[in-house]
Length: 433
Image 1 (cartoon, rainbow, N blue to C red):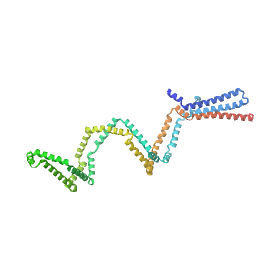
Image 2 (cartoon, rainbow, N blue to C red):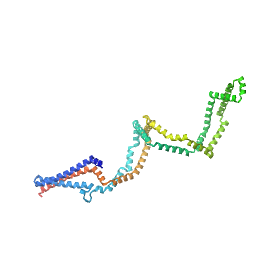
Image 3 (cartoon, rainbow, N blue to C red):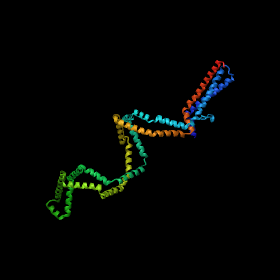
């Protein structure tokens, strides 16, 4: 309370208003003193003119004092009718001000016309097209993003992400999706192209010397283990290793010839078997409940695996760390991408009238909808706020706003009243009254 009183006492507006009131009151006292002095001097000569001026000035000053005070409070605390006009009319003033704001400041037609003339899309485009502006906006967004990361409850986010991802995985129809994917792959012979690529890779693998050497070593090792006596006899004629090499080479050559035959023959039996198997499997994935159940069980087992659960729990930590590491860098990739996107948007708005028209249309429509919703709300808010004010608070706000001008009325009333008194006295003197 002491702080409030101190701040009120040092408010420049209150000090100026107090000085104005003291000046007007001092001027009234001066007129009363002049009136009393002129009577003490017997009203002779110039004193009669002084008396006429001071008398009328004092009457004018008191009349205007009454009028000014009656606006805000009861003069001298007396219950005089039609005084304390402002506090007694608080509710009416609140409703009138609210309606005035609604009709003159929130009229949809007026606001929308100003919005159209303003052409917000063009101005936004010109502003964003400036590299400094888009860079500044991207920098601000980078700062906001870092603050948002700091404000997030990491434990809550981690749990929420885990629940969301696992929940979506559990509800995912894995068999149906696999059937759809394989159906797409089998459309227009894409699965045959996939088979061709797989066969080519197998051919290149079979033709590698390292594979042939391993195959030869395997043949020799197996032969020596299964037929040791025979291999001992063979060694006397020709080393078994050479026979193994020759056999591995022939097996690889035969396999390559068969692969080449499959690749060059669209109607090869292997292709037909592959076609029938894949088509049947797609149908089963879509319609066989037993297969769908097995796929679903495999999916659930994978989800419940401890390694998967640990990965899900640590997913937010990885995302959080990656975002923070990038956003903390002056040359943040995300910020640079946003900067380029904003600048590109600005340039598009500058050169594309149709884009500007579309954006302006959306903005106008949104503004119209928002204004329509806000009109009644703002009107009620203004009215209810003023009605909730304490009478002294309302009087203080208005008196600080217009009080100094009202005090000038007292000054003017004093001077004008005095001049009228002089004029009336002159009329009396000239008519000999």
